[in-house]
Length: 103
Length: 454
Image (cartoon, rainbow over all chains, first blue to last red; front, side):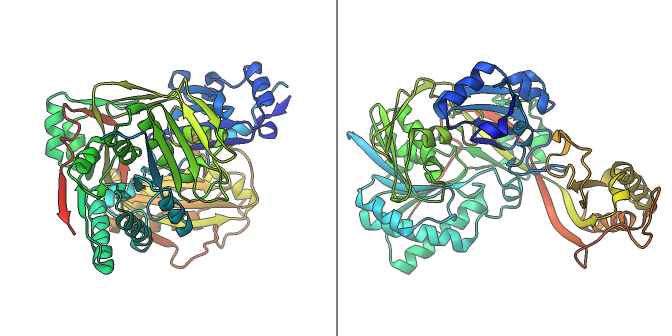
């Protein structure tokens, strides 16, 4: 078992418009990307669990040209609205780092 | 007018972020068909759309515009700016137009300018709503007349059509209000006869300039569009585009890397082939454009009140260990004191953020019980007036400082304040409030164009 942060090139978050946050998990080694893909651990249900949203609200896209997965979620609070914590959505990636990958 | 391929330059991620002058010169040596830059984003939050202020400084925008304008006029090619001034409303657009006029005077430049408006009257949007032409996106509900009436400023996101109209009318400098980011480049490519699919794909690469290159920096990008391909190459020799860097740009600030909704259709990149032409130039083929009924995405900002904030921090392990119950007490006690001033509860609210614990992720924090050495607290009050926000924050601050809690060792004060005064007025604050599209028959109908000869 390894943590995603130890094998991924990037785990990042950013706004996708004012009402959604998009998460990218990216690799720089095709062989590692394929192994992680084969493990089946990176999926919409897992992201939904980490971010406490409904699975049907996660737009999940594997994107092999960038050795990447993308998941887009509705924000709990719109960017910059009262109570928002992250206007750019650029620091919501931490839960991805500790995903266990059975390699 | 048709041609084999069209070369287009994007100067930087956003007008005012800056770019090396050498890269612009390198672009002009390659005889581009246009140079342009995106001017905005919703990323910095609702303040700019709501207040009418520009995202970047006038000085920074003028520096970029001055270089771009002089290059475009000297080489007799169009210069286009999308989503002027950050939010693309009327004040943002006029701020940029005024800078362009000033530069033209200072450098004795002469050209025809088009200014494309994107700000919408509430009455126009209300009429569309009443006609059933507005549709919610994502988790938004149906738009109501009350929501429209309470919106401070509404913009429509234009597609490439208004830019094409301005090009057809012979404008050399085109300033656009709010638009979909690729719009200026899509318009130029299609103006020269390129098909929609590669034109849109090129526009998406260009909108963030050298975000599509590595190493990532604010610099100029050149993209060539042909009948069935797009090629990208940075102008700074220190940068390069690789198949991976192009693919990464496809992931940037979008909900899907392969299907992108745009006004009038969907850009489909599922079958794209991305390959290196050289060690710094990349060719993409296989993109598709699927036409859809034409819709204009709306953006709006609503005033939600006035804000005041104070920063405070504690180094007390006993307090850090019971911070949640302490802050609950602060909320209740502050509410009692504010009520004693005669201020109704529905006219103010207190928001407490704890940095070192859950300040960054809020309700998404997976590890909220972590006990740090220090804890920073930002207390914010949002209220119906600045005076009320200041008054309620003052009471919240005193309550944070002087409330008792079990096991309290330091009764002189619970908080370290780094500043005097500790309380900071933030003025009027806004929130994004529209997540809707408007169906139109004519793509240019919401975007009137003014022409002027300079």
